[in-house]
Image 1 (cartoon, protein in one colour):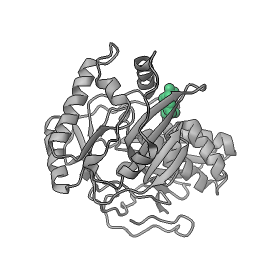
Image 2: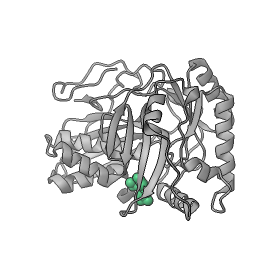
Image 3: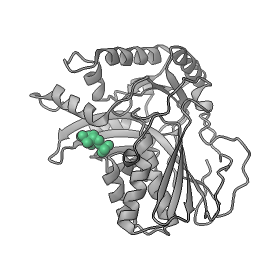
Length: 363
Ligand code: C5P
């Protein structure tokens, strides 16, 4: 895997046209840089914003600040959004353009579902929020235009918005000549969302705890394929936590599995993993509050993934995406076809190793 060291490379890179960074075939290379820069524009940065799955997600106690302590195994994937950040003349202004590319590119297996372009109010756009917070904390005032090539579905539990926010912070800090120190960047990340500190870290596999700010890198086995299956509904994180709290009301927080045992499992055959997601029984259980059609959809998707030969299947984050872990690449490709034929958005990809830099190009 090759990443540009932004401190030493400031020239356009000669890259093969059309080679896709998010190739989904385990081979990662540079995408041709085609963003046009307007009159008066400065250096344009192109950054990766990979998505993640939670192989394990245990929700622990409710804290005084309204958040929950978590114990989760995050893994970044070679699938995600791309950000193109171009400085421009207008002092202090941040313009964000969303370029919706759902169900495009090799990861999607050629399956496309007609999508109405979602409308995100600017004040809820994680890229705009990250750029604004960075300006507030550092006083950085250079105008920027940010285009987000958006591939990760919204509200899918894959951390697309959080990853976009982390990449925005990194881009702004590069343009601002490292105006923010690492601890200030970490603070801004947590303020933007509980998953953002993970994406600001070097990604790969990591045990994440606390609210999401404690990150311990973990080893991860090679040679696994990951199938993401996104149902045609999104999931609201805050609502999911409220549902879990109601479901647990009057009962003690379930005893978590021993962390040491969970950590050891990563090196073992995925078929033996006992990782779980505390939201799954809440979404698919018999609680009054559970949404019955959605419960049925989750069950069908997970059954479909398991019957297609996955060594492990689970729910990512607070949903709505499910995933399968495959030890056999051909079986994973066949599973993608089978799930896509059932009208699901299905992406086939691989885990992304730890990376020190998200910048793909800077010219
Ligand atoms: O931090 P983030 O904006 O992603 O959180 C969205 C909502 O999810 C929070 O308002 C909170 O209700 C819930 N949450 C939580 N505990 C966490 C993370 C999120 O209760 N560790």
